[in-house]
Image (cartoon, rainbow, N blue to C red; front, side, top):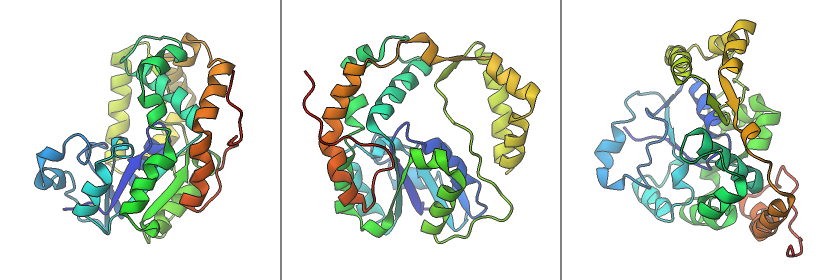
Length: 283
């Protein structure tokens, strides 16, 4: 079966929230795993391999692979495969996204707990994934604007229920009755004190999600003993590295300014964060 919706990114822009919000609707089913990376890294596997990830005959089926957003091959590959498909893209302030990207790399154990500036110097993806206008222009050239839903992490944090309902409307669906979209932060940038304890806790959570008990899981997570256990087993990555240097932020704001200045006209809406687009070059 083919998917009817594909989330194309961006990494560290609330894609896990979107995955949970979509999965909370009874007429939508997610791929397993969440990120298939077919139109970027695994295109040689073939369409049959890809479609085997979508086996449930609900009205809508989806996957979210942030690698698609900045891969120059992905828009045309996807347009040739399913020209009428709907796309979801989530964005956020690109400077904040870059810093979150760094925390993510540390949390995953890909790099040690080094300062952001060191990671920035060694990983071009921190900046590359924040070139929103450059990459989105390719997607808007390949798909009609009414097939692309653009949302912002800043808005999902402020109004998760409203943003979820907007996403359902984009798919032509009414919100599910008596069901609240989980609003807690997902994919927090932390490391476990005990990988075994985290694995046990996550296995239990995954079991409840598969059973359609997302709301029950949210209620359990809020119980004081459970919250205490989760917090006791977590080390916040931010406490292990220095904050971003103000000069680094100024340099990144200047770098992203042309992209952000052009973005509202492309997506047809203003940005929900303060974008300084007339900055002088930092000295």
